[in-house]
Image (cartoon, rainbow, N blue to C red; front, side, top):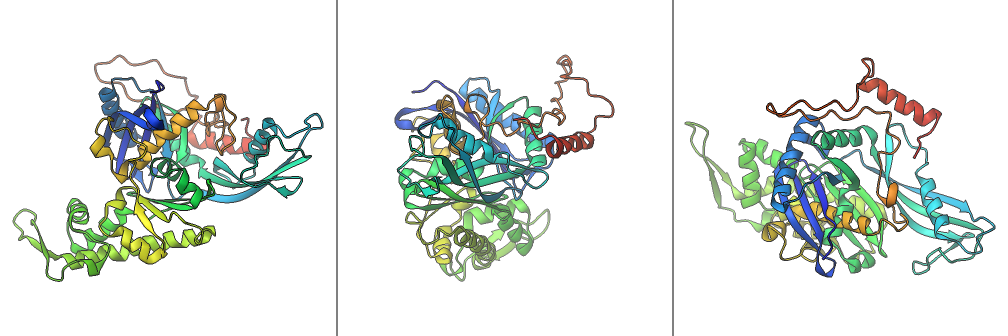
Length: 460
């Protein structure tokens, strides 16, 4: 068993969960500590209220830290939200005359150049995934790596994932306000895929669909390579809100109805079954037909699955998904969601849980064996892989900093530091990190940052 401790932090719309883990046997992950709290200040996967989010992060981390009996100071954070975009890219480099064969540094240089791609103002590249390599314009097969091939020019097609700089900075603010440092930021569907997919799934072709509270995240793999990513702004909370408005009940009642009695297929429930909901104060109990509830859920779930189907078709891999669709996330617990997915996508599907990658002697094992924890467990797996390969070159789509670690905040030094967490009443006031000039407002700092981007470039 490995001794490197990795902490994954899932900042979701409905929950914030922290996972402390180490490498277990058979390449599985052993969770030593787990903490969860209700999310606050997050909408559709985006941090809106830094203070509230930081407080929730601190509670979840403290719980996991206490259970694992370790101090937590660095975390791997998942990122999602409608601001996530993906696009194709292509690049090439000349092989220097002294390299008789293509060397690893040539591949690194080619991938590194992609991070200098001109983007729209306010965007930052978080992942670059090589799709196809070419040597002197001849395509290499998947089984032939470019290192060791003779040629004068190395070219590749890439899948590039970008995020909004401001939203990235708000995540950084919230985590630092909670007294933590960010070790790396990972697109959530990539993390989830680590927990619920295996090598055969990725080789055969699979669409991983993570239905969370605020977003539905999609990652499509084929021939072992990630081919398409997308984040949809519709998920479980939209269904809950529809039930709340349609049945004129409280949100917590709507969520309970969805989980306990809901179905994604109207034809799968009885015509006459009725649910009685307690009235508020002196009001009479409210009766709701299960079929009515199913109708409300079906309408929104169908809309979500139709958008998923559109993204699958848009990727160009809809006919190549031999392993089908894997549904995970909290929304995957909805009754008949698998059947609805197969009906709309015309593709085999299954529910993805992290059972293949989780050590049975992990803490809270039975609770963690749930689709809603795929992202958090996947973050630990992802962090373990990156840490174990930190001496290896970063050639698999990750922006490398020191020792191969992801550092998407490189070049953001002109932005102001995150506000320090307020000290407890009985604790002495900590020394300030740095005295900020009076006129150094956030707007001015952001303005200087973008001026630097366009006029000088960002020092990586």
